[in-house]
Length: 217
View 1 (cartoon, helix red, strand yellow):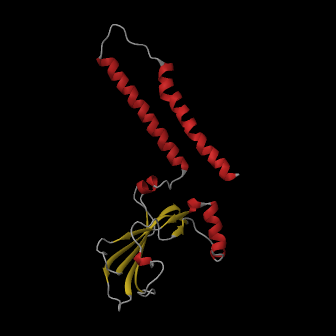
View 2: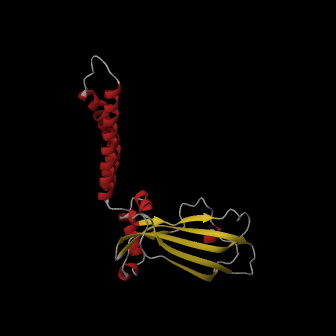
View 3: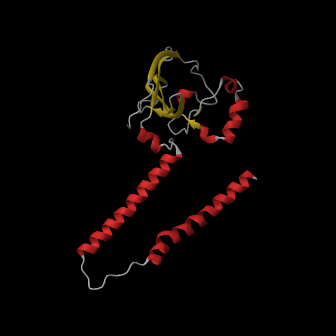
């Protein structure tokens, strides 16, 4: 079953802009542009209250040691913004992976800003928060599944590729009639199919390994 079987919820509420339209050294959260890499970061795995209450002492060290446990919240600004100031529709969409019946892992999140105007006397906006599970194919493309799934998938793809080559070779042998059939040159095929790629991967991996060793040291 590829469709997700998990909790789904959506909450809509009315909020107020705390930031007032005054000159600021940095833009407010609703004034940033689409080219921003991420608005803020979220943790992918659950944390306990004791860990959360430590604040930066916990999260700062964890971001340094386990950066893959965090992801940036993407920002999508509506095309109708132009020179307008305030978005009246703000949507936070969070997707997760139902890793087990009792554990969820966040996959990603996006904030979209829409329906802009410049009415400074109105400080209200509508916030919609949605929480939904990703489907299996999306989890596969996000590399959120167990490593065994990808190992099995690569083995299946490799086996099918070899099988396809054998079928093509068999069709060739059956349809093309020659007095002398060329012998299979295993050493030559191994050289260009395996030995050269192994050399290339090994040479390309040397700088990476050296940099990892330098960073760790």
